[in-house]
Image 1 (cartoon, rainbow, N blue to C red):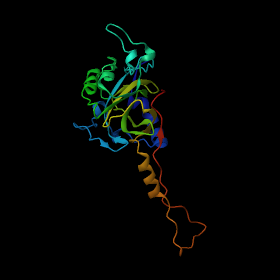
Image 2 (spheres, helix red, strand yellow; image 1 turned 30 degrees about the vertical axis):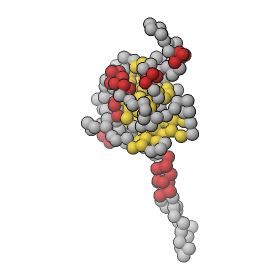
Image 3 (cartoon, rainbow, N blue to C red; image 1 turned 90 degrees about the vertical axis):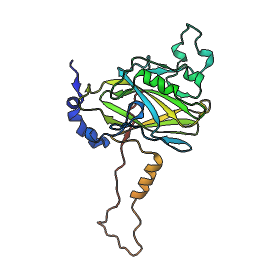
Image 4 (cartoon, helix red, strand yellow; image 1 turned 60 degrees about the vertical axis):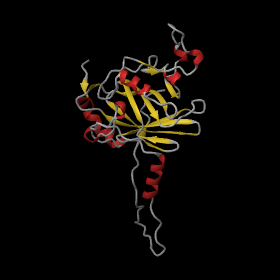
Amino acid sequence: MPRLTRRRALQGAVGLVAGLAGCPDADTDAGRESAGTPVGSSTPPVPTAGDDRVVDPEYVTLRADEADYSDPLAWFVPDPADRPTAGGTVRSTDREAEGLIADEATAETLTVSDRATETEVSASAETARSFVAETDFDSETLLLENRSVEECYRQVLCYVTWDDGEVETRYGRFLRDADVACESGERDARTIIARLPVAIDPAEFEMGATGVASGECFRMERERERERTRTTSRPRSATAIPSETDAPAGTAANATTDTDGGSR
């Protein structure tokens, strides 16, 4: 079956997605992919870090055709007892495809598959390895997350939070370029390697929930709460006399979110 370009495959679906999920057309896509560089920009955004979060973190994206959960694009071995001796191999049950890497010894066990090749939505395997090697584990931590993503979409890592023993990720999902050949409904393997500007102990934190917003970067919960506060109807003046035809004011639609990051 011939593969269709994204524009042909999704031409009829884009209007529905935009109506249900607040997704703009491709001309207004914003975000970034490989090595955290914004589309149309030669320089990566400056991460904004707080005590328990980082917005626009530094990261690389790896993608490859066909999601294969038994063959992730990157994995590491957290337990030294499970690491191979010279010429040995690591059992698949001892490989972690999601989690935190907090020291050089663990980073040296990170394996990046050569299935990942450089495209407009993916860094090369070598770029990912260099990104890992440049990490200063005295003050930084790496986050690895493997998911699948619909072939005709790209994802942007908007922010990462760490609190109450959990690390959570939030993404924005956007249509790929119109000339990209893809097939609606098919899924790619997708791996994120992010650099967090804080030393986190993997013994105290585990990977928590992830979330994806369609057509825009996922907003932080605090920002959502402030927006809801701003758009809530103010109480009427004590001198105002309400009528039966008065309608609530200040109604606003919140961005729709979904969990299209693939199965764990």
